[in-house]
Amino acid sequence: MEAEQIWNLFAGNIRRLLMEADLNYEEVYEIRLRVGRPLFLTYDGGECFLKQKGEKQYLVTKEDLKETLEYVCGYSLYAYEDEIRQGFISVQGGHRVGVTGKVILDGERIRGMKYISCINVRLAHQILGCSGQVLPYIQTKDWVAHTLIISPPRCGKTTLLRDIIRSISNGYDGIAGLTVGVVDERSELAGCYQGIPQNDLGMRTDILDGCPKAEGMQMLIRSMSPSVVAVDELGKEEDYKSVESVIHCGCKLIATAHGNSLEDILRQPFYSRLLAARVFERYILLGKGEHAGIVEGIFDGEGQPCLKLRESV
Image (cartoon, rainbow, N blue to C red; front, side):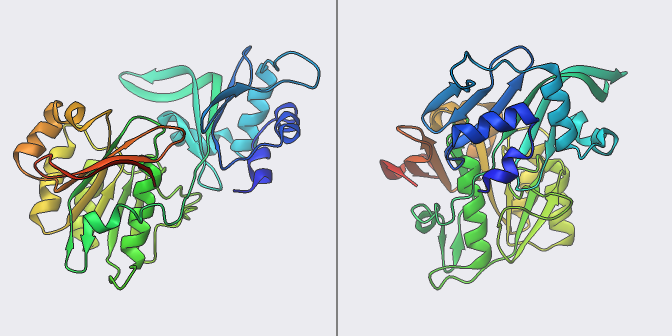
């Protein structure tokens, strides 16, 4: 991950603090700016506030936010209106810049946002090969399992899904590569910037960027003939029929979900229906110990353990 690429997203005062801090950006998850509040960092293992040399915590100003937003948008807020309406902007490197402020409504539809009060830069992390531990449980030469990856926030489910997609697409260890269709609703898996994926999702992967999952799954099935369909954060009611379409047309589904345990997920009506229909053949549960990316266990379609451990991916 290039530090200079990250520094250049920020206003001059913030940039200087980041440069002086000499951070390892492979361990930084978020850099958050709130007007009148300290400059806040979330990293692998904790959080901290950045300070000026020999002084108190640096308090973010309105000017810092305005200047940072200008850099992020290339001095053209108008060009990014559609993305700001969704609450985030995708930037080079696959990073995602979230914004909050005064929402402008047109009836019940969000038309835009003004008086931006917070900017949160979520850094994209690729860990090539991190899926090696779980792949034998979800793919063989002749079979791919419908798989659901479960974890609390910031525990590595998107990073793991990204590497599973790349591995299945490219092929590995004598297993041939397959065509994978990805619905990247929040531009987080591929991290597309101006249409170009910033993250490596493999040579046989087709990506629908910024597309709602339900519509995207249907579009991929109709037009791209994928062997595997992958989506991040499944769970809306409208996703259910699209999931049925995926499995009934012979595609395999790999998805993620927020949850603290398998029981926590399966109590939710959406997933209990999928369990009753015997959709998922593997559940991968991630947790967090001393760092993100701990495999707590791998379970079969009946919820019985195939592998139960605490080991980093």
